[in-house]
Structures are given as C-alpha cells and as structure tokens.
Length: 295
Image (cartoon, rainbow, N blue to C red):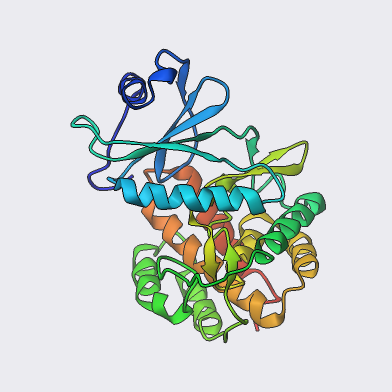
C-alpha cells in the first residue's frame, strides 16, 4: 500500500516478540485480517495484539502513542487497547513496534449499521466523554486533520486530480469550496482524531470497543464528527448531531473533515486496499447527497 512498505510474516513476528518479550515466546500467533493501512497486526495468545508499522517508525513515536493510548482508554466509554510495551527494531524489520491488549469485537460495517440509532447514540456518548477530558496545557500537534481546514486546500487539489472517473470531482470541488470556509467552532477539545469504521468495534449492534487511540489529543471539536458520514444514513446522522448538540458550524466543519479524509481514500487505496477505497467512495456519496450541508 505504501512505497518502501515493511512486511513482516508470522515467523519473523514470533522471533521479534520472543526476543523483546521472552515471556511470550512460543505463544500462539495469528495474523489479523483487516483493512488497516498503518500496521500489520498479530494476535498473541488470547489477550494481546502485536502491531508492526508498515512504514518505519521510531521507538519515541510509539512510546508517545502508548501514552496517548493509555489516556484514551481511561476516557473511553467502551473498551480500548492499553499499551503493554514497545519492541526494538531489527535488521530484518528496521522499525520499532508495539504490544497492546486485545479488544474483541467486529469492525463496524458502514452499510449494515447505516440506520442504527443505537450505534449513533453510543458514538455520541463516546464523543461527549472525550470532550470532557481537560485539555490542560496540551495543544494541537499540527499533524493531519484537526487544525485549519484551509491548510488542506493543496491536498484536496491533488486528491481531485487523482480521482477523476472515481467520484464526482465537480461536486466535490463545489462542496469543498463551501465547507472549507466554515469558521472555528470553538476551542479545541480532546479527540480520538480518527473515528473511521475500521477503528470501531461492535457486538450485537452496540459499540463495544475503539481502536487506535494513540493519537488522543486536542483538535477541532468537529473532528470526531467524521463518523457521521463514514457510518450513517441521513436519519442516523441527524440522531448523532442531536445527541452531541453540534452547532451548524460544528456540523459543517465535521463534514469538511470527512470529505478531506474520504478523498484521500478513494484514489490512494483504489487497488491496494479496496475496503478503504470503498469507504472513501461511500462517504463522498453521502456527503454529496446530504441536503443539510449543501447550502
């Protein structure tokens, strides 16, 4: 999926785990199938996940993510992985990697749960709980989404040039032009920062787990609202909006972040990760047909 991608198989993963965490030597090991774009994940025994970055990552970065992961788990209304340690790189795999607790559940399906009022309520409860965590002296780190919308204009132009014939680029251009100017919705709040379906686990139709909380930190208060368009149809989005009390400005900014994210998925993963590309197309379609943000 990425230039220079690092690949690790079960045998190598077992060797790395045994070297840095001897107590786990010989533990049952199985690769986890999924649409992840950042890590190759292995389940170690019943209760542990080993995550090996697809692109080289320094130990200091994963240690910072581990701190964020622990803080997120404390704030989350549902189960979330907790950090267990960071492994060192190796000649055969030149990157740090990490161990976390395993959280069971099925990945939320954007089609199956599009009309789920229960899931919309659960997500609203999560978003509100995260916002209750004091920001303190922390500030937005400037990485990725969650700062100024207009900082992403160049990226959107690039995505549009790559997406002709995949999505309605004229419609996306017009919608981005409308959404990018939405003013600030207020001070930054604590945010998961990547509430896509792949990071949401469900059981019996309810939210039971949230993955990838290592980026937990201050960001635009509208950022976690991207889940509305990634997951729900119009009634589901309306329910999430009402439950979170999102203002008009918040809602428009949430739609803008969802559009920015989705446009990166539709072309970048078109052949390498069809599941993520399909999510991008589905989200763009929902945004273009959403009369509440059409103006």
